[in-house]
Every structure is written in structure tokens, then in C-alpha cells.
Amino acid sequence: MGIGMAFRSIGRHMCMLMRQNFAKSCESKLNDQINMELKACHQYLAMAYHFDRSDISSPGLHGFFLQASTEEREHAEKIMKYMNKRGGVIILSSVPEPIPSFDSSLEALRHALRMELEVNQHLLDLHTLAGQESDPNLCDFIEANFLQEQVDGQKVLADFIRQLERAQSDVGEYLFDKYMLSAGMHSGGK
Ligand SMILES: [Fe+2]
Ligand SMILES: [Fe+2]
Image (tube, rainbow, N blue to C red; front, side, top):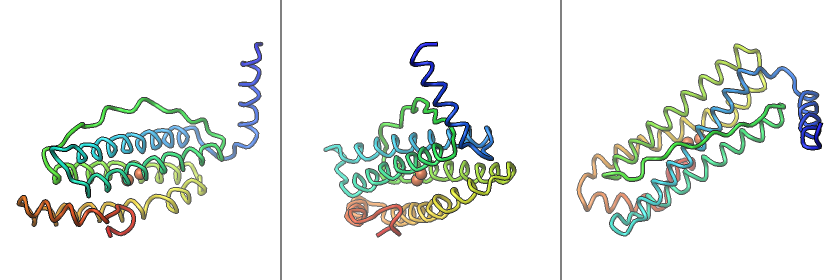
């Protein structure tokens, strides 16, 4: 056995020693969740720099989506830390290519809301699975760190979409973007 192999098997052994009541199915779905958060991180980053283009120039939406991207990366890392605490093995997959540009602010915000609802559905499914596998620790982790924040963020996006629908004109879009300058998805909108 080579040195590398020996270290890998020691690593696996230590991992097994502290692993307790953590089903393979939960480990696999947690990995999917990490990859969904990274996909959202990547999409928000693409959105942020779409709105930074000189022919678009919406600094409010740029900042809003940039912050959203950072938050998604933090979500992924929070789950990665948790995986290691439970003795799971993190497996990152390749991140799909994000949508590079949007015809309007409204289209981007609607896409963001669809993406958040998809992420939330996956979290709810993960919570159901944790219940089926009798894993209260995982249920608590999901509840304490994700479920409320998701619902809060989705309300913020839905409000912005409605406000922008009401403001539909160039002047309206301009004023909306000024409003977005101080907005954050997970800080109650203002
Ligand atoms: Fe997230
Ligand atoms: Fe999110």
C-alpha cells in the first residue's frame, strides 16, 4: 500500500469512528444541497455582473445579486462544515453554466424567485428524508439555519417583483434601482 493510500484509509477509518446515525441517503441529499447552493451562487454572480454592464448600468441590482451570491456560497460552506461534523464525505459536482443575461430587471427577479423556490423544495425534501431516517440532528440543522431564511428571502423577492410590475416604465425602473441600492435579500429587504 502506498503512502497516499494508507493516509486515505486512515482518514476513512477516523471518519467512520465519529459517524453516528447518519444515513447514506441523507449524506447524498446533503451533497445535492451543497451543489444547488453553489449553482445559485454562480447564477447570482452572473446576474450581478450582467447588471454592472455599461449598457445596463443598474448598480442597485448589481449589489443586491452580488450579496445574494455571497450568501449562497456561505450556505454551501455551512453545509460542508456540517457534513464534516457528521462524518460524511463532501462531493462537489461541476456547476452548470448560468443564464448569462436577462432582457429586464423583472425577468431576472422572477428567475431568482423560481430558483429560490426550487432550493426551498429541496430543503423541505431533505427535512422529510431526515425525519424518515430518524435523524433529529439533521432536522434541527435544516430548521435552525435554512427554512425561515428561505421563506423570508422569497417574500422579499416576491415584493420586489410586484413593486417593479407597478413601476413599469424607464423612470420607474430607474427609481426602483435607486431603491435597490440599500436592499438585501436576507435583511428584510431594506
Ligand atoms: Fe441558499
Ligand atoms: Fe437563497
